[in-house]
Image 1 (spheres, rainbow, N blue to C red):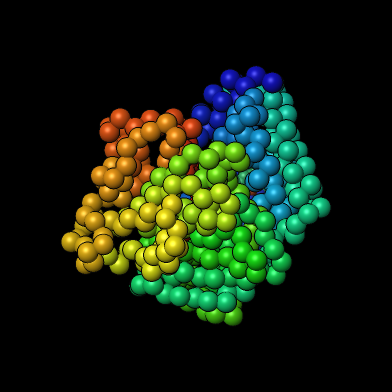
Image 2 (image 1 turned 135 degrees about the vertical axis):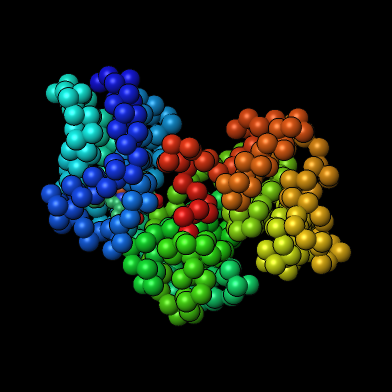
Amino acid sequence: MDVDRLRTSWAAVAAHGGQVPSYFYSYLFIAHEEVRAMFPAGMSDQRTKLVTALGDIVSHVDQPERLVRFVEALGRDHRKFGTQAAHYDAVGDALLATLAHFLGGDWTPALAEDWTAAFGVIAHAMQEAAARADQTSPPFWTGEVVEHSRRNAHLAVITVQPDSRIDYQPGQSISVESHLRPKVWRHFSPANAPRRDGTIELHVSSVAGGELSPALVVSLRKGDALRIGAPVGDRLTLPAGDDRDLLLIAGGTGLAPLKALVEQVATTEPRPVTLVVGGRRTRDLYDLEALAGLARGRPWLTVRAAVSQEPPADGGVETGDAVDVALRHERARANLVTYVCGSEQMVRGTLKTLAEAGWPTTPDAMRYEDYDSRGYRPSPPPRDPRG
Ligand code: HEM
């Protein structure tokens, strides 16, 4: 398999931008009508994720260490769509037809052979992981909303009771779907470590123009059902055996996975943890009371709050971005690992500020959502920017 050739050909196809998903989905839904029902009703050109990921992943087939965990998690997660082996053939066929269409005369039998083989490797890894997961967990869970707490016009904290236990690690995310927007799945990170009663707390902020999050904030009610996909992601989890001090920097609902990490530390071996939660306005600091409760009687935990765009209303809240407040109180040191979670802009800004302050930003010293400019993330996001 000539991987350079796979990559070059994918780059040439991807240069056609939005036409690529349009062609892919038109072909898929006409040639393989049976898969249409698995996708949401409205299929705009914005729906580039599957196609971008397909090309990107398949053309990086030579980097198993980078891809294998991601692809296996994707395969486990895809069980929620009801994907079967025949569906992979359909998607593979649509991918090849799309490549052939955009590459024209450059689509050679040798290239077709390479793409077929590479797709086969990825599809096989996804299906194997799905089959293994079938032995231990359902394709998706159904959860009942047991509490819906609207914290402000744009944000709700939603507690869900799944029908059976979901084994996730703090820092991972799970995807959620609601009858309010059928087949639209979005990732959220549980804001708690696994509990004895299995309930999961989700922090949902309404993304302007988002497909699911505004409905979850405004229209979801106690007693409603949610469907929940398999846990995914490893960028924000605590590696076993790593007992370094923690600096956790959160923006908005980026607090959720970091709060889950604090709870995990509380139930295992406590160690020095500083959690800095930032927002533009005071109203963005929606969970301070719960955080104060968490810090009570836990001397190893320091919680700081920051507001950047208005004077803090409360004496305990500092002025500035979360990272400014972190730098005001913390020094880089060998036994400290920093976790950052928030919007893409917040994460980028925080990393830049820390780097400028001379902090190490190696993957070992700094853990954050891995935004990938090429469209897919080796680790799915704890907060879904698409809303
Ligand atoms: C090598 C094979 C495949 C890869 C690499 C792949 C990759 C992906 C990725 C990365 C996403 C976005 C996930 C997210 O945002 O959470 C996605 C979504 C999706 N995939 Fe796949 N997928 C594959 C095969 C399939 C197959 C065989 C089906 C079934 C026909 C399928 C159905 C879907 C659906 C329904 C979505 C949601 C689309 C949306 O909401 O717009 N995928 N896929």
